[in-house]
Image 1 (tube, helix red, strand yellow):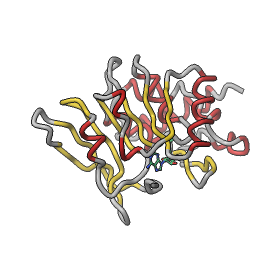
Image 2 (spheres, protein in one colour):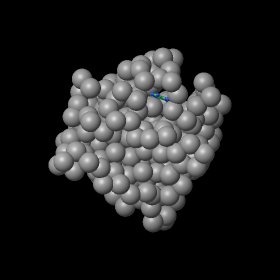
Image 3 (cartoon, rainbow, N blue to C red):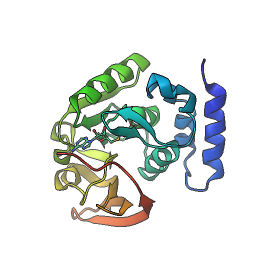
Length: 207
Ligand code: SAH
């Protein structure tokens, strides 16, 4: 089954909400085979707009959350992107549909990192996954035009901010008990201009 109709319906639902503005994001959601990223017993639910378990106590975010976060990254095709928290690799695949450069992703849990890398390779996505603590970012491939975290952090990690280019964007769930989505841009003097974009619920960052 190609699930093309399921994806079309999902894109319709997302475009009716007024929270996703960029056509490139909707197009990417309409293209990435989410059913390939969820456990076999979850493929029927793959195109419902809700989070799903992916094992190891982790979840794949709901499609609307992936879409909103990707939207706020304001990506251009030439942008270099860092992801913290690969999970099953779905969000990275959505980003890889939009940019022409390799996407770099750091995952804490080795088994998740390995299976995500295999899956992304098999599906032909140019994403490089490494096992590590995302709080250190991934200095080798910096600077990044955009970075995002898919796990909640009490504060934006300084190394990730440092690895952002001037004008670079960072999107992350920030907070402990209550989390807010933070969208920030790095200014020429190295400071961040931040805004919040609603309350969210993500698994906490580990390590
Ligand atoms: N974007 C993912 C969602 C992943 S859920 C997807 O599309 O599937 C959050 C992920 O962050 C989990 O896989 C978790 O293992 C990972 N994570 C938690 N703490 C981390 C850390 N310190 N560094 C890197 N990844 C971390």
